Amino acid sequence: MFLAIYKLKVKLLPKSKKVTIPFSLGFNEEDISVEQKDKISNNTTTITFTGISSDYEKERIIDKNKLEKIFESVKEYLLVKLFLLKRDEKKFNIVFNLDNESHSLTNYNIPDLESKTFTIPSVVYNSSMEYNFILYYHFFEDNKNSKKGYYCANSRAAQEMDGDELGFSASLPNKDSFRMLLCSDYFDDKDNDSRNGLIELSGKRERNKTTPLLFPDIKPQTIREMQAIIKERYPEIENFNKKAVKDAIAKKPYLASIIRENDEIVKTVDSLLKDADAKFTKRKVAVQTKFNSLLEKQDVGEEELLISVNEVSDVALAELGEYIQYRNSIIKALRKGIEDDSKKENFFHNIIMPQRTSDASDTGKHWLSNLWLLDDKFMTYSYAASDTTVKKIKDDIEAKNAETYKRSNRPDLSIFFNKMNGSKDLIMVELKGSHAEKNEKNKSISELPNNIDIIRRNIPDVCRIWGYIITTIDGDFAATIKNQDFDELFATGEDNKLYHRYYKELKAYIFVLDFNTLISDAFARNKTFLDILMGEVEP
Image 1 (cartoon, one colour):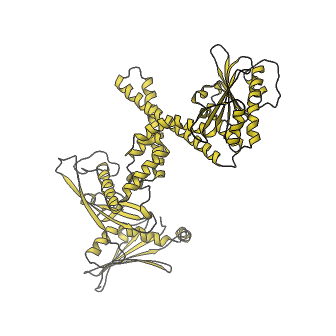
Image 2 (cartoon, one colour; image 1 turned 45 degrees about the vertical axis):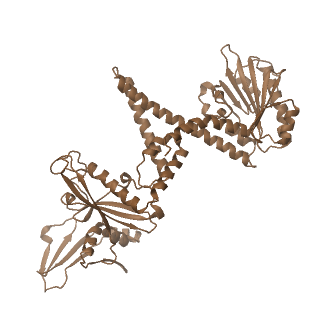
């Protein structure tokens, strides 16, 4: 990293010699010099930078915190070693100088580490062959959320632990930090000369007498010990994690089983959902790939195929759950619109189906609409038009009758359903904003029958017709409805109403539906499925 020559000056007692070891890209053992010195009272190690290049100067100028970073790096690298020296009451003083800045490592600023011992058995030998490990640790109340772990050889950090693998993605309470350092005699001969990795263990898959323990043996037990330490220090984490799991499942119940599998030390809703989304996407690809591969085989065992089918079913169930959860979000958006005076008719219109759009069943655009809000069976339509002229509707469905309509006639929603005999059924909807004026709502009582009449006269193969007026039914509008000979079908509350009338001349049934009734009914159709998903993980 540094394009410089490093000189390490070591003064040793009792022989009182000064040993100078130059470190450079062209290092040669012959360059080491040894000088005889008068007797010196203290052993001292001095590291001096000389011959610093312009590239390093540029890097140092850009990074104002270079010295502090070097200081912290050395401190972490030697933390266990210095703690043991401090514990044995041995004095030390390591000074870092750069320009006018200075940092020191002494007996007084090395934290007192706590420790926990445990053993890990080897599968190479019988179960009585165990190896001892010491996990040193220290927590910092610094609000920095810095969490690091190291494998140590000869009491020095040799390899940093993988934070993602250890499950440290979420913050500890108050964003505390910690350092955890795993030491063992087992590690002491498995690092390299540069002390930057346990090369005798990294990448190894086969155990033998030289390396009877590998990382897959060491990491799981180390994680369990770390979790126990953290949970003992922060007992509130258990309840915090339970709430996070519950809240995450409430947001995405279709991922409940994956969320429950999460084994992170500290859980948050965001970390749980991010992890579950990634795992589900990976699982879905793997399951689909496996299933497709099985289908291509000529001879597939019944049990193997059944397992794969069940895996595909689980994925499909989760995807269906995702869709149901999406529908719940749409319902919540409608409910907020009712409560917001600023939301006009176009807000509600665009939620149910975007204005000035049309869709035939063979175009694959059913996902553009939320007609299921009215009823799930309405999603089987053959043609749907939103805020579209009767002329376009006629052209789209190839109706060939005389034009007896105004070109401005534009029904809010027209939904056609093909019948076996070639005729069509029709759902026609007139929407008014939740907070529309009284006259605007009253106008819908005449607008919808008139639009149905136009359809009757221009598209003769339409059989049954159902019409819906959807808005908020207040006291004034309720009086208008009743004065037009509508019958109240049911009422489950002041704002949850449904009225009905049959128009004999039009051969059409027309309903006046309160937005709250629409929302309650749609939510009820989702609730059972969501309850099943969430109930799988109830504590």
